[in-house]
Image (tube, rainbow over all chains, first blue to last red; front, top):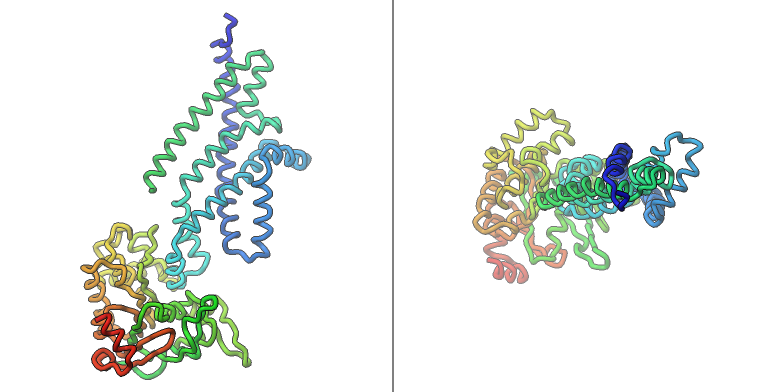
Length: 215
Length: 257
């Protein structure tokens, strides 16, 4: 039975795909963490730091946001690989920093959506600036932005296959390798797609429910 | 009884927004423990006066002193110098403000709203701050809602919590900015009753902007009528409300009473 689909190869590809999926998952989780933390820091700097600090930060953010992730991956790998052993670490940082620039925009919108009255109440209570950010503004801003942040996490998850350009063995690259070794691409790639779907669809449903709950 | 030592002093205060002058060369004082109500048509600069004292707006010209300390600007060596933020915060710690729209922190419970500043500004221990908050909530009749979120409270209840939050900082001056204007009519009374109690039981100086003329009459030692950024006339409430000498005041009171 040499038709276009072989269950034997579908099952045969599974172990290497799941190995790759671990890397995909790791990259998504760490990349999201990086973007969540750095994004917030960038948003706060752009909002409240003097322009001598915030202007260069804005410049870098715009530059990163306006260039393709693939180019950044290849470039960072070329420049950093002599100094950094782990290509995966380079990939994760590039992904995280790329999405930092989107997350920063989301946070900015969330911060702007906190009513002025909240800042004024904090001033009226003589709360120091840092405490105002931490206890009053950031908790409300994050609540405003949680669904958008979740959607970017999913989008990061779906962009991890770009890691193939720097030879990181994530799931799609492993599917390609399996195909190259066995000349059976269809099963491996199809399964990889289904695994992506199986992970991101429930997550997006979860985010939609969260969105409704917060609205 | 109010003493005559000035607690709050406005000297040559000017405030403009863009090219629009809202307050023009304003001079007045509020004595220690004195309750002063500002009345006048909207846009006459009353709220701006409170916001200047709270440092929510920056002075365009002149000086405001609080208990002898410069609040926003000071004169040093013949020059007008900006008071640094840290020092401003130390001075404004003596000032509390209650807002028209309450401005409670929605991410905190009632209790957390009240203990936030006592803990993080005054440095009280959590237990101390909570005991104090409990007493204040009791006073404004909101102790039973201490674990609720602001969104679960009516406007009048939120405003009573906001009053307790301001009092938790032991202010020497309390600014009340149209505190009943955003409330449903049936909730105005409960808030004014709380404020009347506080006025009777404490000697906090108060600067009040309100459209509740009966309340103004009950709690004020002095009423100032504002129009177009200047004081038209001022005096004891009985005099201003019963026998205003200025035509502008007569017209205004006829329109609102």
